[in-house]
Amino acid sequence: MLNSSLQQIGAALRARKISSVELTQLYLDRITALNPGLNAYITIHAETSLAQARAADAMLASGDAQPLTGIPVAQKDIFCAKGWRTTCGSKMLENFIAPYDAHVIEQFNHAGAVNLGKTNMDEFAMGSSNETSYFGAVKNPWAQNAVPGGSSGGAAAAVSARLCAAATGTDTGGSIRQPAALCGISGIKPTYGTVSRYGMIAFASSLDQAGPMARSAEDLAWMLNVMTGFDERDSTSLQRDKEDYTRDLSKPLAGLRIGLPKEFFAEGLAQDVASCVDAALTEYKKLGATIVEISLPNSQLAVPVYYVLAPAEASSNLSRFDGVRYGYRAPEYKDLADMYEKSRAQGFGAEVKRRIMIGTYVLSHGYYDAYYLQAQKIRRLIAQDFTDAFKQCDVIMGPTSPSTAFDFGAKSDDPVQMYLSDIYTIAVNLAGLPGMSIPAGFGANGRPIGLQIIGNYFAEAQMLNVAHQYQLAANWHTLMPKGM
Amino acid sequence: MSLTHQDVQKVARLARLAMSETEIETARSQLSGIFDLIAEMQAVDTSGIAPMSHAQDLPQRLREDKVTEANQRELFQSLAPQIEAGLYLVPQVIE
Image (tube, rainbow over all chains, first blue to last red; front, side, top):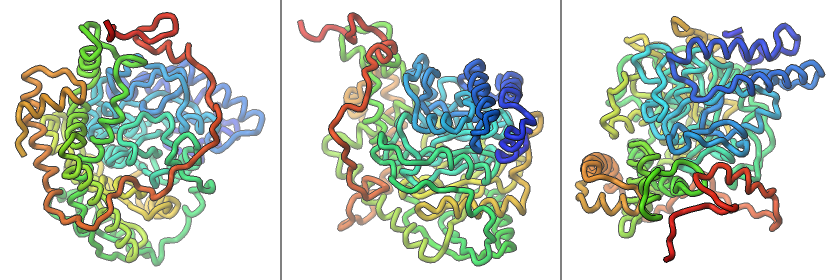
């Protein structure tokens, strides 16, 4: 059951070969055994999960089951889930019990899925290694001295170690794709506005987008069917017809034009990653695709632009944490200003404070035009590069991350080096395009490598088709870390 | 770009973050490195380019002006660090 697809698990549940309670218990037992070593989950509520499983079994028995009814899904601890502690990886929200459900959680509840627990993450989704979590870093199931990536590192590790059937993540600058690559799983960040941000704790609102993380592209399609949909409570949620993301999975790829941005293969890309991407492209040629060289001339500006815009938005979003209505309050203070300053200083970790400081600086009097406005203008140039590129190709491919998973501590003292680990993913968020990562092999050190696939706006079904056809030909996504 | 001790002190105050002298010094050197990275933007000619504030070029949706949320005061206040008689308590601000 651990290596079955969501569709196979769903079929077994509907045929009553296994109950949701048995399946949920199987995963809970694995979590008890393996999570102390991996730290992929922050909160487990076995009783709540099992109650949901019993309700799912009733749905299954009555015949009104949907595709994901009874399937245990891990939720990133950035989504508010009513009655569940929702920490966002921060001391600030260590004791915060969410009073309502995020839209994503509501969608899974309606589908009859089981919430298996809340996964660990970089604090407020700010990080690429999970080392900024207040609850300690997640370990990479493939190499326990290596980071799982971030910020959705707990989700990636949980999927990889088979501690859930599938998981949710969020991606502001690569937070689904980079951990998916580093943990050898599949993940997709859909077009901005496709999944509602209601109840998803805000980091950078013009970039934040939720998406699924799973073992295969096919599983991602089933997850996306549940997660997407219009929600009037998110002002940027798009009013579009509901799509079936599984509809194109089996289309042949003959005639597919794959664009390779030359900037993604320049200096800074590790040799083993480049070789795996090349091998994947060779496979795609066998499947009938043609390769087109393209250019994204402004892509090297994506990291600097992102580190103006995302912190600016974060400094504004995180101003709500003032120790008054919810969240951490310092035990001692002399007046109101002191209470704010001490609560925030003690409640936030170093990386979050660093980004609040960057954002506050670039928005402060006298610097707005030079930083914030200039970054917004270059953001348009970066988005335009993609529009031009998609005139020559159907999808864009390249590495997800410049290297395989790095060791703990390797970059944690040097913020700039850490920021550069998202060099290939950030531009996609700035443009609002869909992007995904699928397993494409292993590096010299035996750690997984991801292939990034970038599609045009609303091309998720096509990207999932492109990924699925590769996964029918290659077996990287079926491999499981040793000792799990 | 090199930030001064006073620059960092000022930003910390604007951001409502208490920082010790040592923390300000560490932040100064790390933020200077980050602003060196950001400085790559300055060389780009962006004259005539309209700023892009958002991935979507859509107008704000409007809704009917009616109450859609139920009153959940007690539930929400149960999350507060300090309340009294249905009010959020903070240190006295007016003498």
